[in-house]
Image 1 (cartoon, one colour):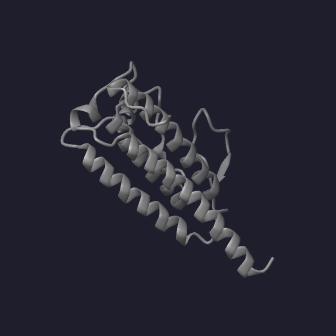
Image 2 (cartoon, helix red, strand yellow):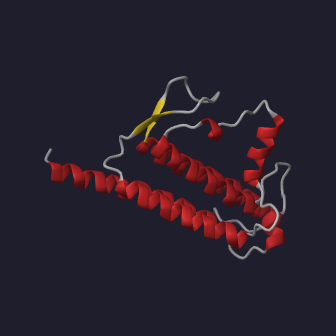
Amino acid sequence: MTATTENTVLDAERTSLLRFLADQRDFLRFTLKGLDEEQAAQRTTVSELTLGGLVKHVTQVERNWIRFIREGATHDAEVDYEDPATFEEHTKSFRLLGDETLAGALEDYERAAGETERFVAQLPDLEVGRELPKAPWFPEGASWSARDVLLHLIRETAQHCGHADILREALDGQRTMG
């Protein structure tokens, strides 16, 4: 394979991955269309999840995973689920707090999306790999490439789109997934 062919394949793969991630982001935003601040902050199930909080959470998650590709795992990114203080800090990522608004969360989500796309566009390839942080759900010493991270972001965003659909349907009966 020539360098030009390799670049064409890489560009096509990068474009596809970013397009699928953008599609999931668009779906999440569509699910939130027409909500007011009270609705965005309302719990509609027994979980702590709110529609506004989901946007805040996926924004933070996306930035954390892009930072992981750039810098590797950092201790401050790890959540100690046994420590109530750090776990409480983690759960704040699922709620709009203080003067945070749905509009502000959506604007920040848009900025994070642009940051991701610019960062991925400048990567020399998608094989850039980093050792995963210590967590009970990752095998010890396992690594992910930038490709793996993008696939994970697509999966996680899609999963939260499903959560948002359930929350929205419980809120006002609107169904965005069929």
